[in-house]
Image (tube, rainbow, N blue to C red):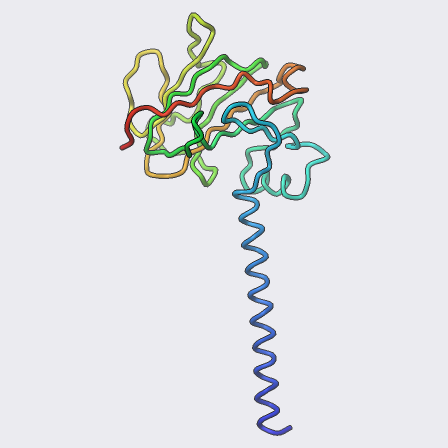
Length: 203
């Protein structure tokens, strides 16, 4: 083999390897993007989106992978329904540096919880170790509604729980509804959706 032929062969191998690496990187990157940002939710109630296949035998590959990545959507609909909000009730993206009031009637279920997560699906670290409001510690007013405030600083409102969200990050709320009643299971969009209202100013 001549030196020229050997050189062409090396270039061909290098080009082939480079294309394989590029294709692999693009494939992994696009799959990760789908898992982290893809739309897995099939029913809407205000700013809340419900995943209809979580924990189901009918769940597709990406739904199952999201459970593995985020760990948020593990049980089937009869046991737990999952609603996720990444925007407020006006459609604006949630930010941890802003303060929000979340309020509404408790979901019709045996038990429920509402948790604040950062955009990476992890809880916000805070000294108070306060991460969620639920059917046991929520304060229900005379109209039968609960309320909470999320934000980086404690608003100091008596009777309204505060969920700390320190830093300048993306924010999402997850509403878990345990053993929901039959009507809600049959029609997830019928949820009396808690309102998410951005309060004045962001730090």
